[in-house]
Image 1 (tube, rainbow, N blue to C red):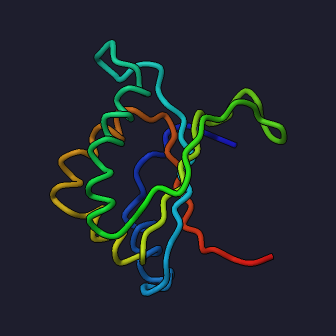
Image 2: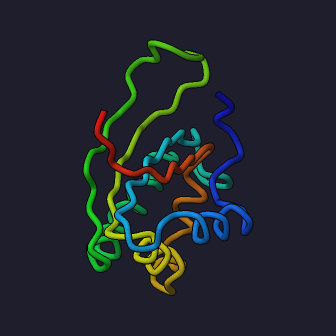
Length: 133
């Protein structure tokens, strides 16, 4: 897994998501996160900058009816490249892709998004739907 330089979706990725993901179905976003050791140009740890982003994004998330389902630190890679493992996995549910887009394109979100961008070496985001096995 290449956990570098992928933090912000391209315009094409975002447009594809909005076109192809069912607009009226819940979406569970699985965040695969790898923090920078230090935020560029500062002595602040990437993990601390992400914690600030998290604190500021929670009210926006709740404002569109979203919620954090689970967050956890990655302790060990059992299958995969142990030298390039993520630091954290965060699972967030939104009532719909439209609500995700509403939040992530809002002025309030744009005002805090820089902390996410500065803090992460990798910030993969997987749009998922709940399924039964």
